[in-house]
Length: 310
Image (cartoon, rainbow, N blue to C red; front, side):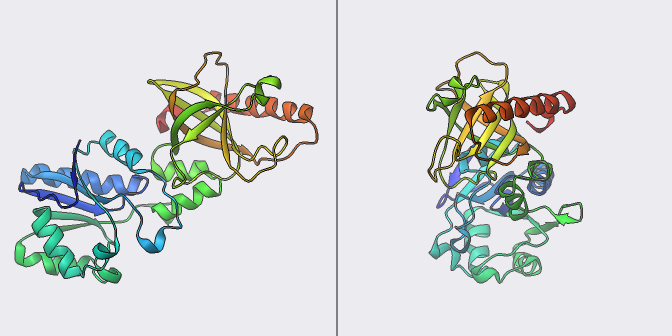
């Protein structure tokens, strides 16, 4: 994958799709697929023009995918060229006319643009698809709007998926994403409480606080490291039975795995929520519940082809 940084000028003809692409969900994949198809017909470079930060007014919403995760997913579906832009105040004050002239025409040398039918651009989102076509006409640049994808009568969007994740609805989140939502990080040792209880656990030191986390609770998960998949259950929460703080931890128990995975870099996929997190009166009650959680996870793995989402 070749990455162009903002300020680079592309001399080769491009067919570009434009957007945040947070999550690289099923709707995004339709845009990217169409971009590649048109680029092949025009013998041009298929380009994804995207951003590595949220617009200022949306910064309170955390990312479904961090930049390196977004690039990983794009490369996985065949994206070869990406143009990365920072959404700063100056950029966001570009009028629709300035954006089209300076970015589409001059910077990325587009011969065609592929966008969602609800696409907006320019200062205060004043530009729409119809205006994009008007601006493009003198330059003979094709504009190809793609219909929005709907699942169960709902438009697939990053905000919809974000809401699914923060509510713990991983089935609907994963269906809209087209893959299982994941965290990336490294396996580090916890306090050793799980080992004393007979269920050794490890903490996942995930990348940073800009990443959305599922709602607190216990989940069926799969950890991928070095091309191998490890079945697991994961607690996202505060471990209230033993601790009293407000720091969210991601704590994983590998099912049937005796190998030491400490230090490994993992991609942790969330498949289904088992239950909410709760405080138990005694460690023994917690152990009994963990046994039930593990059995539910084993049943899930027995009944579902989880690999189709990974």
